[in-house]
Image (cartoon, rainbow over all chains, first blue to last red; front, side):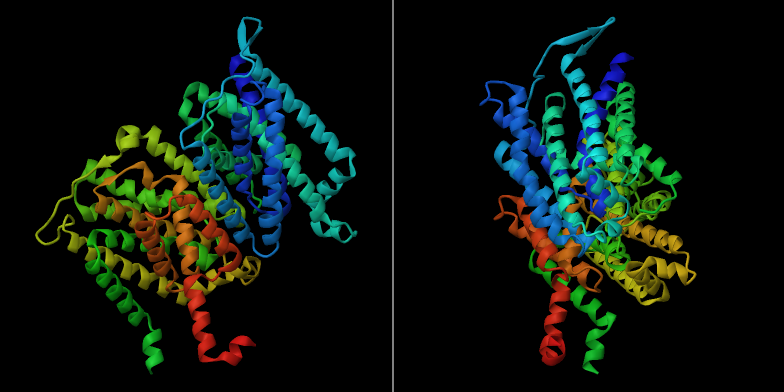
Length: 277
Length: 318
């Protein structure tokens, strides 16, 4: 049972790291950023590509992968999201979907369509009581808690975080104070994208790395945001861990049903939550 | 007088039928049957997007519901093609009625992704959960009964039948969008809150439209099943949703001829030009980006604008 809880916390932590950026764009602009999935995939593939150059040092490879994904997310924000935002939400979604599609095909072009193998970078197990846990998963859980605490402090203590939180609640009121809110959202967009690629880099050794991984993760992030509540960052965190648990429990009983179960939970939440999106 | 005739639905239907027939007998009947069915599917999609302003990124689910409804009926109940089509449409209606109340509550981005989520559940059901009946990854292959000249294995009969379905769906969607119901839909697209203030139960209207859209898509799905003689998970694959979105956008969303033009344009590109385009998804993505930034009215809207400018240069400029 402890194993299932640890797996749930690992998946939940990864989901949290990835969906925070998605939640910010969705909550602030009502845009589903499909390209978020691309940044996640870029993180995973960048680790795969960089690992040989760092002589198998996973930590440095992951950091370099996050840095490598920054220009990608900057281009997406500057030339797609910002140019279409405010004109038409539909076209912003379509354009971000187009970006994901192009990215998937570029990944297929460079690395091929079949999944690439990555092995557990630590490879040692941690013995707790009578259970054996991969140390790597423990590291992910701890790291996700650190990021959770760090982001909570960021949104509570720094002026950028406060402006973003205020903007999520009432965009026009913040603008009428003379604050150009787009600039601050652009900063947290980059932060969220960097976290997404970090999530991709961290998750790549324990899941499969394939070109279509971005599609799947976008819908998972969406489920997290719906369950957690729109524009509610604490809700996103709780929902990520809860859904991670749901996934781990479902996978324990019946492996292939894990994803479908998450969407079923999301549907139930939507039935009982009367708000209109 | 001439303009009245040219602008009438009957004339346009004649042009569509004549166009498809020439196209079919000029190239390959089998291939053009595919084109016709795909156009029906695009009509179902455009009823939601073009008329009601709700873009679904998971419409393959409803196509797949029809495809598997028809396949399961033919495999386990009776091999009668008409029963199979009816069963396919019934599956589409059922999925629409069950999912409708959840889906139509939302709009914009949430609507787009909820459909994807349900599409992934459907894909999982077909591929894994109900694999004993659906054949999992291999799908089911079928054989349909025939009665005299009503023989769906005959290419010419199948083509004529699909074309008749297209005409029927085209006529129905035209009637719908010109009726009071269509006016309410346009109102919902423009500003839903105001329509609700007028006393309309918008949730009900959206639900009905959603069910109509799913059942038209399901009709297309069951026709695909009959045309190919099998149903496999590619009929419900969530990664194929881009096809119908692309088709609806390039044709011109919300226009009368848009779905037919767009569906044909997409099928022409994917059937005849795909040979020369080595990176297919890259091409589709780039084309979608261009549409989203520069070409929002689609082929039909662009041509209409061009015609209006020719007829009346002063007015078009002002």
